[in-house]
Image 1 (cartoon, rainbow, N blue to C red):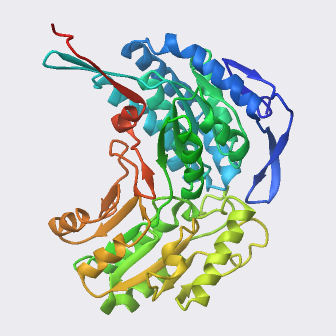
Image 2: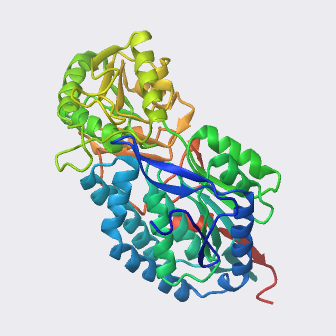
Image 3: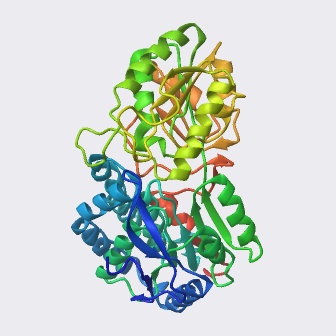
Length: 475
C-alpha cells in the first residue's frame, strides 16, 4: 500500500506533482480496494529527464552486465510471484489459479526467454570493411494494457534492458497494482537510478504526453487500435519509432479433416480464456457448412461446462470482465448479434444465473454468423464466440483474411501438411496449428491494423535497437 500513491522516478518513490487519486475497482465486487495516484505532464517530464540522464552510462553497459541485472530481476520476480498473482486476480478479476499459472507465469517466462536470447545475441557484425553496430535506441516510453499486465510489462521492459535502453512505464490505470509491484522488483534488483521509471495515469494525461515528448526516442504501445492510432499521430511530430501491438479478430479455421468435437471444444476454451479478454483470442470459428449444426451443439456443450464465478474459488474457469465499461460494451455486442439475426446458441445478455454483483458475462456462442455482422467485424473483448459456416477451403481462407486485423489465426486439421499450407495463406502475424503450447520464442505482433513490430525473446530486443554502419572500419 505504501507505494500505491507514488511514482518510481530516478530510483526513488516520489509524490506526484499534483495529488490526484483514482479508485482501483475489484471487478468481482464492484468495490474499490485501493487507490493510485494519477500523473500529469510534470511527472512525465521528471521521469523522462531521469531516463535521459541515465542513458549515456547505461547504454555502455556490457552484455554481461545487462544479463546480470536481468537475472537479479528474475530472482526478485520469483520472490514476489504469489503477491503478483493475487494482485492480478484482484485488479482484473482473473481466477486465482489462472492468475498463478498464466498471468504471473507469463512475466517469468518472458524474463527467462529474454535472458536466453540475450546470451546469444550479436550486437556487432562485419560486412567486408564495414562494421554494423546494433545500439540502444535511447529513452523509451512503454504503455501497457490491463488484460495481460505482467505479460506486456515484461515483454517490453526486459528487451529494453537487454538492448541497453532506459525507460518510462505507464501501466493501465485500470489494473495498476501488479505494475507497482513490478517497479518494486526493479528497485530491489538494483536497477540503476533513472533506467526504469514508472508513472501511473490515464492515456490522455500521461500516455499521450509520453508519446509526444521530444526527449523520448521510441514508444512501445499495446492496446486498442483506436488508441494506437492516437499514439502514432502524437509521436509523428517528433519522428520517433512507434512499435504497436493492437487489436485482433482472429479466425479459427476448422478444416473438414479435423476432429470436429475436439477442435470446437478446444476453440471455445481458447476463445473464453481470460474471460475472452485477449487480443489474439480465436473469436471467429469457421466450420464446414455441412457440419455447422454439429459444431453449434459441440460449442454449446463446451461453453456450458465453463464455471463462471468468484475469482478466489478453485473451481472457477471465468471471472468477471475488468470493468463496468467493458461489461456494458460486451452487452451491446451481444444485443447486436441477436438483432442482426445470428443464432444465439447459448449465453446471451445479462449476468449468469445466481450472480447479481460483479461484471460477470454469460459465456455466449452465436451460430449462423456472416462475416459482415458486427460480432464478426468488431473486437468484443469478452467471452463471445461467433461460428461462421464456409462452403470450401478457398472461402474459409477468404473469410479469415477479410478483416481489418491481422494479429493471429488458427488452423485445425488432422493432416499437418494440409494445415501448414493453409497457415501460409493467412494474413496474420502468428498462426497456431492444432492448439500448440505457448512459445515465448516465437515472434508476436500483427499485420494490418493489428500493429507493427514484433515482441518476445530476440524479436523484442531488435525493436529497441538502432543500426549503425561504420564504413571503412576495416581499412
